[in-house]
Length: 161
Image (cartoon, rainbow, N blue to C red; front, top):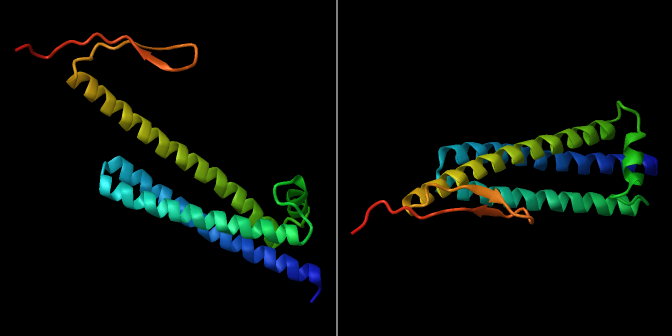
């Protein structure tokens, strides 16, 4: 077996492992979305821990792939590695895996943005509820030069003793 074929098989195995871990992260992000929507703090904490573990695994797989590419003379963050992979025949396993990994990264980014939106909305609701409870219900929010939110709150007491 030629050295090039052996290297391609190794790279394919690395990409397959990275894909497996990345699909698991996508599943975890979907679970996180459901947990955020259900407002179950214990479940959210559990899933956050799973997410951090999955991210560590993906980082480790990425590092292994980077080291492998460096060992065959390609720097991973460069256009060199991308060029090597994209210039393989479209029907090659590596090209297919690489494209799948790129598509999966887009799905992960999108799901993470959705989850971030749910968190931001929940945070706004909690802030509004706290403002109402503290008598700051009439708040005009504006933004200063630095982009910081400024509120023009005049406390209005719910009751006086």
